[in-house]
Length: 173
Image 1: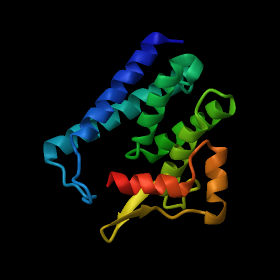
Image 2: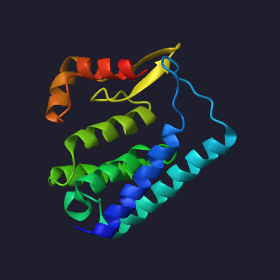
Image 3: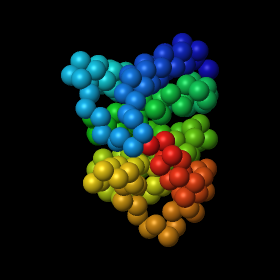
Image 4: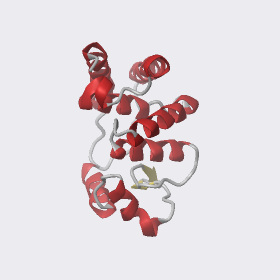
């Protein structure tokens, strides 16, 4: 394992989460207007993390479990999740994560989340029901493909049944 890479991933994850935790919406309040300075910091952090992770991917491949440890690989996934501003790069991260998961070097659950994120950002229905949105003030899942087989797909990815997940999502709000 590359401990220096792991530590950098963890530091970037911490900064990613720090900026997001500054924006705690009140219960039932899904839409938050960020002050310009905070919004600029959030955007800068995401852009820097995306650029950095793309450089790592180009030089070393996906930072999976062997390279970055389980926690470091989880941090890499989180940075990829938050690269929405660059859909082309986010799809490249998804492709690399698919390969890592197929080789047993990454979480299938993380792959499911990133797959859904990329699909939703491309205006396609998600496969695993991981992405929620607000429509008319109500929190709900973004459109889901083949809903009848949703829990089957979720189980294959190591995710809990959708009804349990949906309940947790609604409890958070």
